[in-house]
Image (tube, rainbow, N blue to C red; front, side, top):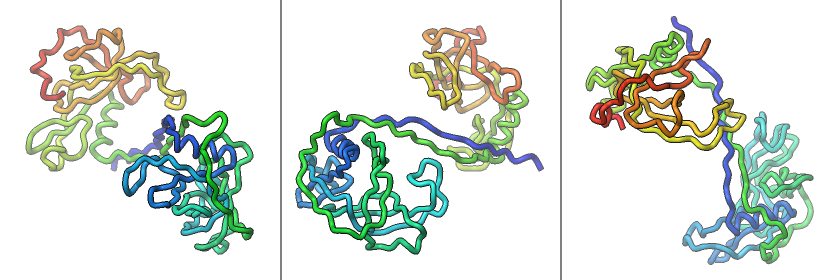
Length: 316
């Protein structure tokens, strides 16, 4: 039995968003220990606030302050907190309808155990000591047995309002490629490039998928392709990858779709060995391997004449 390939993978990027007047007021309010909702045409108060009425789609701008106290409407216990979650100890995820609001806000409840949590329990916000204008300015909710808070009108105006946020998005998982892609990766480690041929339409797919995406039948016949190929389309990258991506490539550079000789599906790879503004459709390229690498580092020009457009137009 061949070894089953498996590897941990991380997909991570910063998500940057500019804020409109409603979201700006809401997040700035959290920084100032103030929770704002927005009023709809039928008199409901939505927290968190939205910019358009979910029923009528009308633009909403009338803000109102709601209390920092509220009632749990539903909950789920989290016995094993993950990294970057609100609390490092077991806690409850809760939907809390703050006093004065008609919708519920999702956040964490600090409780000693699931037996201490119930629908209908009263809670209040525990504010983070250092607040920046983000939902994490609410550190969590905590049980509360005091008076019910009251809503009040609010202009939504603050000094130095928050106008944009950057949210890190991250997904950690373990990937197992399966038979078809596993064979492709094993061949790459031997500096060979392989695909699989569909028994029905006879197209060769690289990387192989285990099944033909057109005919829907399983593929098993392995076919060696390339290693040379033709650039079909490309883009110029002008934004340098973050340090977390482990890529140290100077910009600008080119990523291209490359139709390898003998393949009926273009794969994508970086083009090197040529100025970015000289990369073109039809350019003939070949892989460049680095010492000890399990896959090509990039593709470079072969020096051959450019391929005729008709030779690759069906792969655009």
